[in-house]
Image (tube, rainbow, N blue to C red; front, side):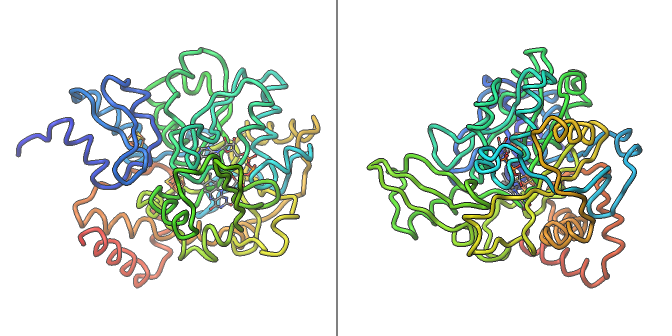
Length: 412
Ligand SMILES: Cc1cc2nc3c(=O)[nH]c(=O)nc-3n(C[C@H](O)[C@H](O)[C@H](O)COP(=O)(O)OP(=O)(O)OC[C@H]3O[C@@H](n4cnc5c(N)ncnc54)[C@H](O)[C@@H]3O)c2cc1C
Ligand code: SF4
Ligand code: SF4
């Protein structure tokens, strides 16, 4: 059988729709070889700029979150006192919010990730935070950023639901040779956990990994449709804030002429999961719940749906999954230092009720992967994410339907 050439093997990741545009391949191989750019559909994708060799593509396959997903290291899994088949290993499930009213207000939910990042900087535990802020060039996009001050961290608060490449500067961050923390989506952290097997600096320098629980981001074409459906000229949009300033707060679009339009979260995303327009990779995401994170922070609305009446005045409360000893210690220290208010423990039932879409996805992922494999598509390899055990808990009919549906869509 002829051997696939390296470039074709790399581009198979894109062809099979497994790329989330995280930017890691550019960061690892350099811009002479790979450059992240806007693709025809508007999303961020790598472009091959010069010849790739086998070693380059092996490195990408070993680290890309489209081809490989791993959670916290085995030692951290073993030391976690609690294990749930859906939610994974954890030390504690709690409610919390940022103690500083401004941080809670600006944050996406209760400002917990921002408060933790500010505590990490002020306490001298890390020298900088690698995370994401609003893009200056593309108002609906996120842009990777390195924050060294608490003001910079606050300025980057809030969820960015548009295309974002959080890992585009990861090599540059490691090259600084200083302790740092990363706040990024679960798939970004899967990629960093993958990289830890190739680069010893990951475990030495990245002291904390924090994540929002994630149901997926909005493809650029969906944003384009939303703007045109609402009579907004995209070229005139000067700034876009997805949420925050309340929980979830409004989606705010500012125009070059100084006018502004506010939309309710429910009108932006649709009333339920069926309305969400997601990239394919997000529909087959084996880890939206942050299994690579020391701490994952989530929303707490019943059935994952905010109340239309109170979402501007709700100050926001996060649920927090602390998965590692480092995560628990950080949480306790941030509470003791006055950065977080402790809202008390919650249980798995609470997580299930507030994140039903995460359960559906996790339970169905092995069957969906089987359908993709049958269709000749690449499938992300997973490590320690319990997909097989969950598959066995499902009814045979459920697995059959999920596999068949995915197979049909993949071959269409
Ligand atoms: C794409 C996406 C999908 C989500 N889906 C869900 C969901 O299904 N269920 C749920 O409970 N919660 C979801 N959230 C999380 C929720 O919106 C809040 O981010 C989370 O509750 C943390 O709130 P916070 O107030 O602590 O965050 P903040 O204090 O506002 O901090 C957010 C941090 O996340 C970083 N960040 C923001 N956007 C991105 C991005 N695109 N990529 C990488 N880093 C980013 C920021 O730099 C900031 O440091 C999602 C978030 C994102 C970005
Ligand atoms: S490393 Fe990231 S940007 Fe590169 S192919 Fe994989 S998902 Fe896409
Ligand atoms: S749903 Fe999964 S793949 Fe999509 S952005 Fe979230 S963590 Fe990444």
